[in-house]
Length: 174
Image (cartoon, rainbow, N blue to C red; front, top):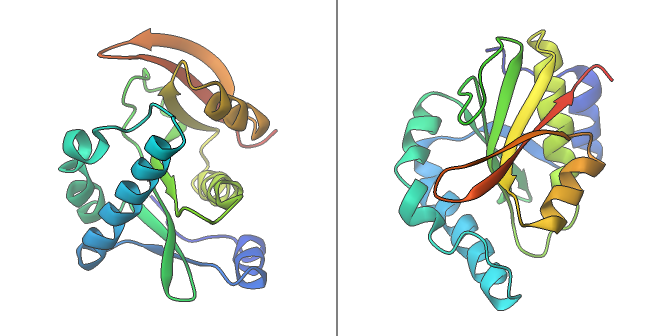
């Protein structure tokens, strides 16, 4: 996968003092802390999400980092967001025209960072001639589903494993 942003996207990030980079294993503790901080924020705000996220998914992070599929956003040398963008379809049936967004997190206190994540992922999808950006999320989290809908991720299905989830995709060319 090409990991280079378009000049237009690079300019947007520079104007907002945001640095986009592929994570490395040296940043793993900071990345885990980002998730733990967000998990605590969820708990403090009575949002039942990610209560055991790092326990359940922590071993996936080094693999995503080693595969160069985990990215971070930094501002003033501080990690303010992280996400995985890969070819791994997870709950989706792969159609060969998609990239999959997982493990999206932003630092507590930073608003609207998700917008930058979505712009970056759409930009990378286009640079890789990929038509769809896909993700899944917990079905009952209405706020999160609204955010994804607002950013062009249409509901394309639902499923159930150990929790109920929504499958969403965005056509990056629309």
